[in-house]
Length: 472
Ligand code: F0G
Image (cartoon, rainbow, N blue to C red; front, side, top):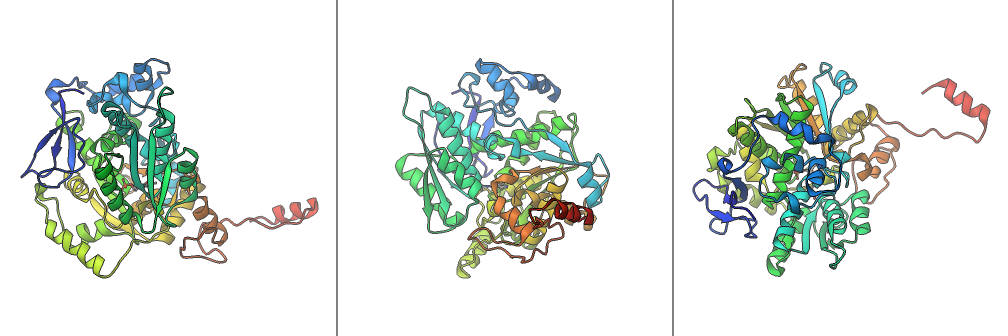
């Protein structure tokens, strides 16, 4: 533990502080979320961001080399709660910003202006590894050997992988306990949790119900909670933005476009930029656009339709509670093909509102058909992503049409998870087959603009040539 980092309630009227080693996921006094905070004057912050670039190529065995190799810990001066000798790392965050000129051309942006931060490259195939390395590092500092999360799939895959890969040989393995909603998880993700040995509880309810139960469980049994209410998870996820900046030679883009589910990423990104600005490491802050699925539009409804604002921390909690009360009364549940973001009551809502204020951000929603079309478009131009990730590109197109994003803005979309996480969604889109129990608008035959059906052909070379000559 160190004395330059602490935890603090995000409500400015409370602002209670807690030591780094207090295990809390909300403020004991007022119930608001907590931030990891630093006494920056006592930290060794480099004078310029380019300092971090030199570590990129390090490979080796010592703790410093392992930290340098990680796309999270090579930025360790900006998340100074951890002891570099005791970090838990599995090579996470070695992702790069991809310049997507073909995709840009197709959606009406200028070449050199659209970028994809491809987080599918992470060891478990999603951005979650950025946060998990940080939370597991804290679990190690605290000596916690049982961890739990509720998940739409990727958090559980990442947590299960870290638990199994980081258990020391001389001790029994860290137990990973996963709560998933019944029928609500893509099989690629479920297969990861099962393969890595997680105790997997399939709760008869949706993600929001799982989130509620896991919070009760961890509190009652002293298990360490790995969801994004854990402030250290979000510290790790800040580094996604550092890598976007690095991909642009440390120039700040105009827009960051990110899918919004539980709103952990959105929260982490706002904090990352606020801190960099405060430290004088960037001179302006990009705008953040958060994209909901139309079937899970809570942030959109509250922010865009009802005008709820962070208001320097004094946001209208009563209005939020009333909104949730109305959803409950209607027995409304989130439903979308983008199962990763099928969340009706995002736990980081307040922090996301703060991000929207800090970044002059906005929120849009995109429907399932448009998500799948854009997923196929991203795939056609080289990047396999899962449905939730494609909401970011779909969101850019909506904002281009509205004239809010201009074709020569510099835009970075976060592709949060790998395409192989949810092959059923992909095969369903291209063929019209419903390959899993979960329902989505099922085209049969496929109706999507980008559908690419397999062609049935006889086992006969003449016919194969004839079909290929006939062309698609
Ligand atoms: N994209 C993917 C691929 C995700 O898995 C998630 C969240 C999001 C976007 C939304 O990110 O919650 O930070 O707004 N998945 C969580 C899970 C909820 O359990 O795996 P967020």
